[in-house]
Length: 444
Image (cartoon, helix red, strand yellow):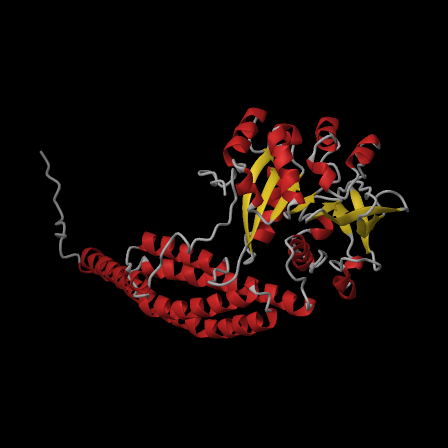
């Protein structure tokens, strides 16, 4: 595959497998003493744990090309914490110059980071086109994407025809790649690119479908979620299937929201709003769609020809427990780095974390194999073991800070006693003063 950009995280927010490149051994963990090295080592360990590295399972390799803002604000929240996905991002649009990229910069980045050979592109399981400026791709790259889909790669494009800007929409509607997607791009472009007013809308899931990607989530009330944001019109092609409609943003009529089909050997989906946004946005509050991670992963599983999630409740619990595991691990590693600066011994805590890592590795293996019940059991066991690790880290912190507090108390107390002694000597006993004698007036 093409190499990832190096430098600013804004250029390429990739989530690569660390443990394949960085060997973190037991001896290294136990005897590294420099605080900066400890922090770096444990960051690598945390990424390895959370990326779900395992020996037998295969990650889903995803190529994302398009809008820098959409990736930063939406997709990273999903994929950075998703054990089953490894993604590579190619910036292909910077709306309003939010990241300071000119068109020439974007052309250069596409040339550098888009797969340079067709076989490299074909090696990806899934292509996500998140509102790119398709004018920036060459005809050869356009043809490669189309051919890769016909030969079995999955594909998603969002916002109908990517934009209401006619130049961007038209470049997509005349491309070769759009033919492989279920949205009739020329028809949408002819209707003014299909913009809906920014506002609230609901999603109605189609019950009569061949591809049961969204139907398992109906029982969990996802249709009651009010989506806030901008969406675009989708007009499904003959032979494709409407998975859901959007209601409320194009008046009272139902408009296609998500369409899917099988195109030659590949599978593709067109989405009415930006991937990972609005109804599908990452849940950050109680009013959001709490099952959006499961919906996105079911889409990814279907497009990459994996098995769909068979038990939504279990998968939802697994994702919640993985999030708890990540947050608790970050706290423990931060605490270790803090107390290490005071010279505390963290060997015992590191040994315990190695045991947790082994549990997480086994859980990741089950996750990659889509054995979510077994994964949940191991993650729950790891969470229960965290209590002893956190207590051990707290004890080490208290022991390290005890000496700090004692030294501070002794310094403050000695200063107080010395200052008091000086004041008593000078002001009370007046040992350094000589009493002034009275003088007599002399008359001349």
